[in-house]
Image (cartoon, rainbow, N blue to C red; front, top):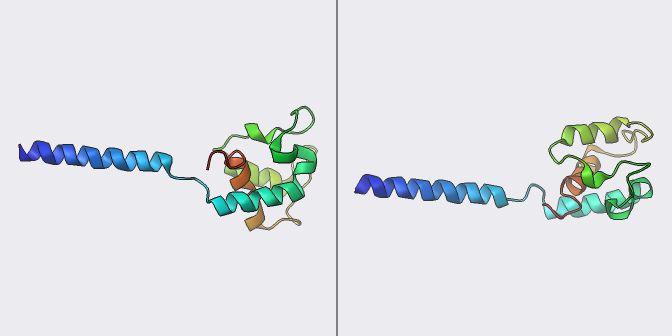
Amino acid sequence: MMKKLQFVLVCVAALTGAAHAQTAARFATASIDQGRDQYHRTCAQCHGRNMVNAGTTTYDLRKFPTDQQERFVNSVTNGKGNMPSFKDALSTEQINALWAYVGSRGGKEP
């Protein structure tokens, strides 16, 4: 009986931990806010205010894969297609803040 109770408690603890891991925010609210401000200064003129654009002439960042941070950082740093490089204009911190904004879908998926 005691082993069953221990097993049940271990299962409950595991499930609680898994549920917490699924609801834990990937990005800090402050980073998303900082990224939003940077985005509107640097990116909105091409990618649209709040990332809203037709996606016909510039990439629709709302569709950017949220599991591809390295690709995002590389594109911003080195440029891609018609997008210029921002390696001399933005710090690593600013680029990471942009990722927090874009990777969270504009703060909708922290």
